[in-house]
Amino acid sequence: MAEVAGLSDDIKSFPKEYDTLVGERGVSVSGGQRQRISIARALATNAPFLVLDDAFSAIDTRTEESILNHLKPLLLGHTVIIISHRVSSIQWMEPDTGDGGRAGGGERDPCGIDGVGWDLCRRGPGARRWRRKLDEAGER
Image (cartoon, rainbow, N blue to C red):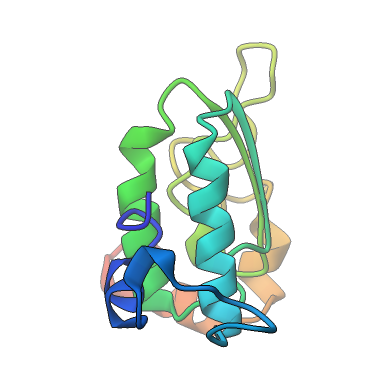
């Protein structure tokens, strides 16, 4: 799970790798490392239900994308709720209303008009970047 959470290189740099004590009496870790450790621990339980509440806020977008790409195949058949201020964290999700219907703007489009994330995409932080991506892809 360390590789999925983007922690492998960090752990290899610790004095005793996986046996290194972290925290107050051990090696200090950054906020992003703490978040990735939490993601790895949550995945290790293989629970059928996973809530990631702003789990990527202290992680750079490149690392976030890598983690999400590794997560996709692992989470098939699981219920996942991702709460995030970043559109990039939710854009790959397939919203489900629970009754067989779909929420949001449709197939992998949280920013579809009247979609779940429309307000965030239209006015939220990163809205200009999201619109630029849509323009570059010829989807707007």
